[in-house]
Length: 106
Image (tube, rainbow, N blue to C red; front, side, top):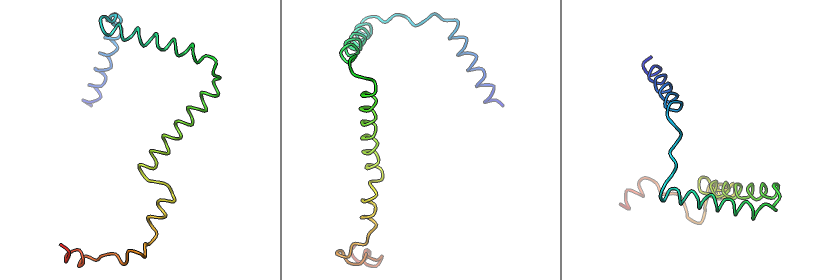
């Protein structure tokens, strides 16, 4: 009950602050300079790439996402062939050591 009341108070405070206070102040100094540079760069890039069809951009972005997904999958779990190779018994190594073997080696 108390958490619900606290959540309602926080929501009401957020609405009050959002409606009562004026908009954010205009940036000044390095913030204004950075904002202007980023806006200019965005405009230049948009105009330079305006000739590229949207479907081509979608294909390139899908390829980038697929490549990143493949890399992430390899980092986490590897491929199916890697898992099969890891699960297959390796007869060249000989039998797996037992607890007694590892105790003797220590």
